[in-house]
Length: 329
Image (cartoon, rainbow, N blue to C red):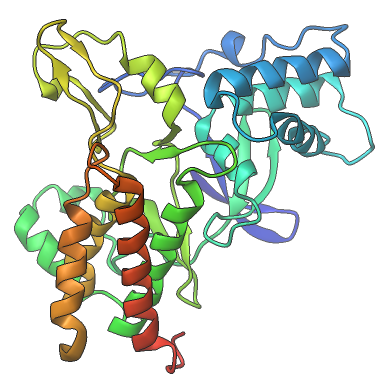
C-alpha cells in the first residue's frame, strides 16, 4: 500500500501482491503473475459476453444470492473509468483483474456504507481508496525494527495508553458492530472476517470507524468451497487467515466447512480490553457481561441468529445510551 494523490484528493493506492483468485492457507504472498491477471477478456469479446463472465464469477464466489444481475450492472458502471458510456477492452481487463480480489468486490458491494472507505478509482490492478487519518484502533505506530524488540505484553500495555477518550472509543466500537451487521447475511450472502486485528481498523477525525484492510474478509461460500477438500491431521490445519477456524473430521482427515465463530464473537474479542479500560462504572459490569456473552457465540449453537441479533443490539444500545448526549456522538 502507498499514499498518493488521485486528482486533488489524498488516497491510499493498493496493489495486489498475491496471485489472483488464490486462497491458500498459511502461505506467503507471491509476486503477481501478469498473465493470470490480464488474460481476460480477449479481443473481440462483446459487452454481453463480458457480463456473462462477471455473472459466472459472482455465482462461483457468492452463489445464487440476491440480484446478481444488478451487481453485474454496478460493476460495469465502475469499469467505465473515463465515464464515456462504454467499457473498452483495457477497462474490462482491469475490472476483471480487480474482481478476482475479494477486497475490491466487497468495497463495490458496500460503497454506500459509511464504514467502508470510498473507492476513488483504479488503473490496471491498482485501486485507490480514500485516505483515513487514524490507521489503527490504537494511537501509536512504531518502526518495525523497534517492534521486534518490544515484548508483546508490554506492547499491549502501550497500545492501551494511546487510545482516544472512552466515549470516542465507544463510538468507534459501535461502528465495528455496524460493519459486522453490514456483512452478516447481506443481499449477496455472508462474508467472513478472517483476520480481526486492530491494525485492520481505523477511524477518521469524527471517530467514525473505517475498515483499513479487508483482504481477509471472504465470501462464506467461497471459503467453504476451498476448505472442504483440505487434508488435515488436527484442527490447527483448518485455519484461514488468523481467525476463520473449522474442525478437522478425524474419520475423513478432511476439514469441515462450518466456521466455528461468527464475525461478531471475533469483533467482541477485539473490543473487550479496548472498551472495558476506562468504561464508566455504572455500565462496566453490564458491558463486561454482554462482551463475554458475545465472545461465547458459536455458529453451531441453537438459535444462533437470534442470539447474535440480541447481543448485537444490546451492545449498541448500551454504548449509544452512554454517549448519545455527548459531543463525541
